[in-house]
Image (cartoon, rainbow, N blue to C red; front, side, top):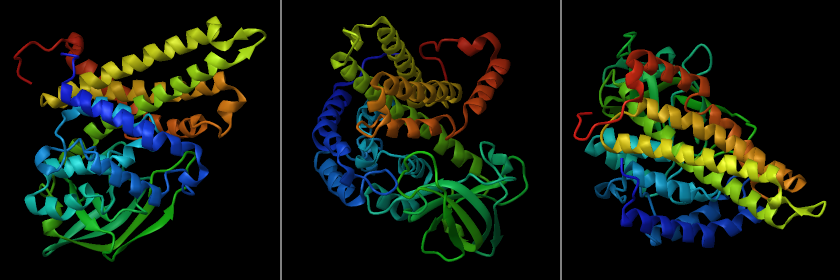
Length: 404
């Protein structure tokens, strides 16, 4: 693969970096910028989103005909990393989960009518969305085949019953994508359906409190008791739920990694700045070999993550599935984010543990990275499965003009 980026992508990167530095970073030090759940306050967010749109930095991930910039996954890797230099960054540019993944999935799979009704309002920033798949025991988590929420077809409607939980953004969402069981077929028993928050027959039972700061709308437990969804709100077709989850979750896992790399670099940035000015026992921290080893190790591991992300993005851009590439990137970047925050706090000492920097915010947020969109162990099992199937071919290089 070619590691050079286009001038167009570089221009976007520079403009994003300037916007983040000028408009967003200064807000992190002001308590008034935060809502009660540790995210950016909505009135402030709306003003920043207006500025992002005016600067042509809105929904870059989508195709030009949909309203985006069509920069592809490799371009997204560059831009998303820059956006998440700030803890507030991605949502300002409409590139944060779960809307980011939902928009790309609807763009890829929705009909023209579905895109107009369900996708366009999210692109315009008028509504938020949620992807309702994960269930409490004995339902499906990392294994969608265990899903028990049912959508029974009755005439021209599907009637839904069941429960979902840890549904990101549900409290603020208007548009929902629901994965439910429409038959007991092991391969085609799941379907994806669209519904609006104002429809009767479902409710949010609770907003689940978590250790870290929350996305807007939190992580909620939902209950379905007779929700009726018209057949025209079925995505792709009955029994295509697994296809929808694959299209939705693969790229979404990778975009998480793109953003987490930005936060990892921010941790190193804060640690280096403090080590450069802080003295102890007559020696500047930055001159201590122990500190140099910590920062050098992080720099290397972040770069490994960047290479894995870019390789996975390249594979997706060329039309591949990038299953093992995404899994490797997910494990590497999730762990380096956690360690970057931990090391940065250690170097900053009590200052890092306090709220004088965003390190404690990132540290609390980072612990979920090894769980969301598949735990480390699940991705390592996927990799071992690929290794068992491919043998030495697991490490093969793609040959020029080789079919995918």
